[in-house]
View 1 (tube, helix red, strand yellow):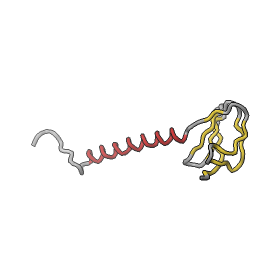
View 2 (view 1 turned 120 degrees about the vertical axis):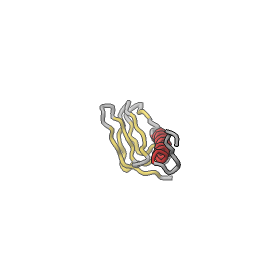
View 3 (view 1 turned 90 degrees about the vertical axis):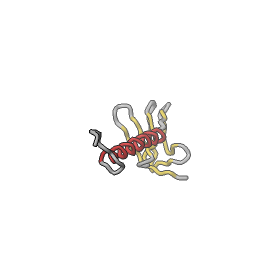
Length: 97
């Protein structure tokens, strides 16, 4: 027998490699999904927001200040607003298609 270890399909090393490959693919998918979700808009002036795009409706209107950035988090059905001072405000809403 040679000094090389055999790593067949059922070996722990082969299963480890398969798991790592799946995690890498999943990570890329999550990143791509995050890019789609995080299409951010910046308010040019103080704006009262009731809907974002044609489909996302807020439970209650919210003010977004000039220069503040906002986006929809589709995973939680919330509008996220980066207030510019380190705070991110989340406001509940729903998708209506």
